[in-house]
Length: 273
Picture 1 (tube, rainbow, N blue to C red):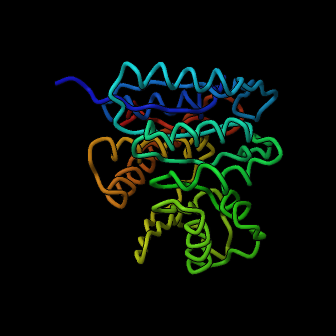
Picture 2: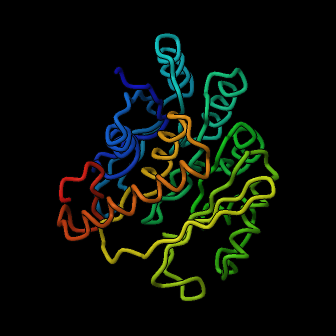
């Protein structure tokens, strides 16, 4: 059997932990053929982001059009889009029906605190792209930015559900608010809850928090894994459940790796199983 084709529209991570590199490994783990449209090139490692060079929106669009003209793309995910102009151009492609089963990971800030989106990005997501997403996958910080809420006010599962419902007002079919990036005692220090909300439905995907510094690229990998599930025809809740299990296994397997001096990559391919 030949593999299905998926597309990632995202930035490159020179350290290999996140971005396009994480998406490629995730899609490979699901036995999918991965195509790409690069939106930015970053100079980064496990300690943080040192520099970012964005790709012109016309070139991002050209990459996508080249892929979809030749491949039957089954699902698409976006990661780092870098500029409002690129967000708007990607939304234009989505409006033309060229980005099926779209998973939007609204990358705004790196885990080390480096801005990965220029001014106006939050508004561009709200006003242009989110309406075309089958599922949007912000972490708590990103969800708070999208909703103009202080992240320190998010203290319970109910608060996460309220954030997800506020994001649904921008038009996506589902919103998944991820809780794994913050070890807040007000939520939990030992659990990593992700909450998926659709029209009238709330799903809580809970798992033990893995005690490891090797967690770079978990958000990219989760959204890519959800897109993989959608490519196979899974429902959003089922695809999300499978993706959560995939990332948990990858975190657990790489928990004791020592690649770099900071937050290392996860084990997408099950090397340490």
